[in-house]
Image (cartoon, rainbow, N blue to C red):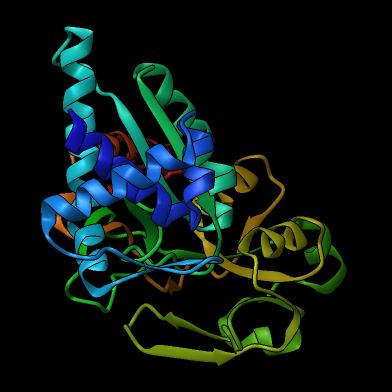
Amino acid sequence: MKSLQDLDIFVRTVDSGSLSATARALDMTPAAASAALKRLEAELGVLLFVRSTRSLRLTQEGALLLEHGRPALAALQQVQGQLASGRAGELRGTLQLAAPSDLGRNVLLPWLDEFQALHPGIDIRLQLSDRMANVYSEPVDAAFRYGKPQDSSLVALPLAAEHRRVLCAAPSYLAARGTPRTPHALADHLCLCFMLGDDVHDRWRFWDAAGQEAQVRVPSHNVSNDGDVVRRWAVLGRGIAYKSSFDVVHDMAAGRLVPLCTDWTTEAVPLFLVAPSRRQLTPLVRALRDFIVHKLQALAQGAGGGEVG
């Protein structure tokens, strides 16, 4: 399918920012890759790139094609692979995912390995960063995000709608500094904070048995823009952390971290799988979502939690 190949070259060129890099990746000459783009432009009757000797810049029409063409390409490539294999029920294709650092390294990575073992026709490209991936402009099919996106145009599939944070510290820290009995006592402790951009998350919220909210501004002893660093500091006994319970569930099960103030309700941090549009929700993405929901439910129940979906 020549048009499908041309669209693939277009998307790859946008992602790499270089026509020659795309040509090398596909083992073809730059001239052949350039001809494919010109053929696509001629077929559509629009200019897709503004070309210079040093760079390629998308036109408005090119940006529109990228928005709609990327999910269409993924779906068509998956169908093409299924037809070629003769096994229409087999999942095939490339999954481009983004996830927070801590969740990605310590929870999702082994699950993605397992998912890939169940579906050998799948390739995975995983971006780990606590900076929120822009699912419109970056080469991402779906992104794992804590908190429902404020952008209502995004599609957010719930993975763990009732998920919450946990206040925790290492036994060594508690032995040296004592155990806070209420969130208000955190003012006298060393606290480990996460930051996003210039915003330090040092206002921690809790609710007592009567439903009264306590918002505590904690002293930020150590601060990092990497959630996994905050977790590691906590395990090393450097202070108290307020983390997604998924991020520290293995540490708590092993006794490396201890939950604190358990008679208080902690802040909700629902987990979603986010995509730029419903067209991006290919059978491959939906299968991954179902697989991860099952894993998260088993993880929460194994840790003494309830339903998360």
